[in-house]
Image 1 (cartoon, rainbow, N blue to C red):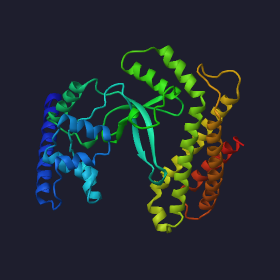
Image 2: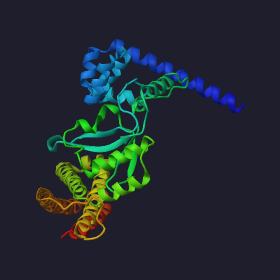
Image 3: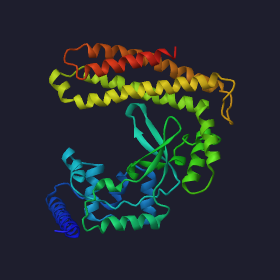
Image 4: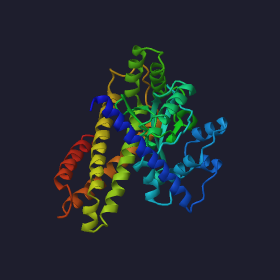
Length: 353
């Protein structure tokens, strides 16, 4: 059998699977005891204000199948319902307003600590026509192995070191950064840096200007304060995780070993952010090497800086003490890795003293 015959057989096989999936969702919908939400109810559940307003403005109407799938994602009755839209190929056509070059914010809900945001620049779709063409192409795939993850778009996110790294967030979790009060401050170096980066993605601007604003932003007090705020969130989250795990039995701790792995990542993040803070503090004390648009730190910024440094020192010491106690337990998973992470954290935090 030749390559072409093999591809044809594979495509036919995948198409058969797709048809079975469609039949399955129709059966599940017919047997479901949960009322199917109206179009208005589904739109109201979407967390992104920008997406909700866009759908209403366009007069978009979701079909029954898409409304059921969106309900499972946005308001599932249980974990099985939520997982069902990922475990099989179920794509939902979801129009959104975000276009190439738009500065957007990916919203994280920190519960009692409030929301925090990752800022980035859209890389997908120059206009509505480009999105429509992409959407139709996905729906027409004969081998159609598309699933809900295909709803995701592409964003270049601003990283702590001033570089950009792309990711694929769901547009339902994005907002226009300009619509979130206090996020894109006028005359802010971060705002200017994001804008010149946006111009580059759209095909305008210059690399020279980009590099100039990047250096200025990295040497600015506002960048230091942003780093400290991220450290604060990581410290608080890490501390809460340990308080939770301390109450677990040995069996429960073993079962949740994979989650402890994510705590190792949190340890790395804390030490990484602290190292960045050390570099930023050093930049503030230099008479030379400041950014082109560098301004003296204001009294208000000094106050915020002092408060956040105090939080870092006190919370970090508490965490390190808890980690020390935790790794002394005989049943502690990944004990050696934690000990190494602990030593690195102590060393880097002590450098700020």
